[in-house]
Length: 293
Image (cartoon, rainbow, N blue to C red; front, side, top):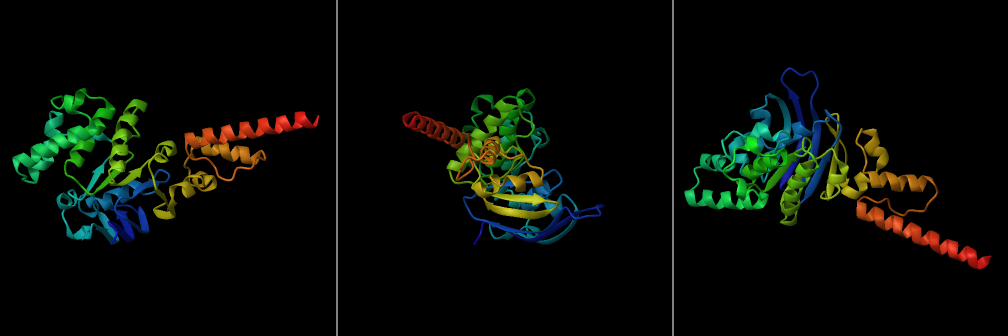
């Protein structure tokens, strides 16, 4: 049984004339790392909230279809219950932080579960370790950098020990240092086999992690497949208004100039290998020409 199953999901916000999601269907298996991309207004955040059960209970509107998370139909379970299975980290970390220090922020949702004190302490230390914030546990979030605040928000979710983590453009408002702070944690979670859905506008970051990519446009899935297949499809990405990885564009340009590239590069390392091979081939060709002369 898939860990996540979405079938014919449609949602129209209260007062809206058009649905934000239109017949969305897909499944995700345990351990998958799925990128979710699309232009502004495609329905990415709406889908994330539906997965977490925030839609239709907290955010009101008309919902059709069904969402199952670890076998639970989201319309039959409270958001608090679902939060123990699926955690959602939003774009604006500040909006998720309510307490006066980092430790209290992480402990607060655990206390609401009425967990034993020993279990709360264990989860607190594990979450602080994972996001590398032990030395800042007594600080008010106001005094933290953007990347550190986002890591606190992430820690408060991870302390719930969900099977699934959804990050909705969690790095979009951060500087490069903050982005790397958050993504280093994501990298550790991926290595541990956590099921992750990452909404990301920066394809260079997405290629580091995603095994699979789902593309949304105007509330519908227009593509779903292996990350390499989707992220090297330059015409698809440009058609939906998503900027392809720069190194992939370099490879495409070299193809247009007549160079025979069997596969477009997706990562910087692949791009370096491609250029090294081209330089070597050119050097060999030049040497052969000198011998002929």
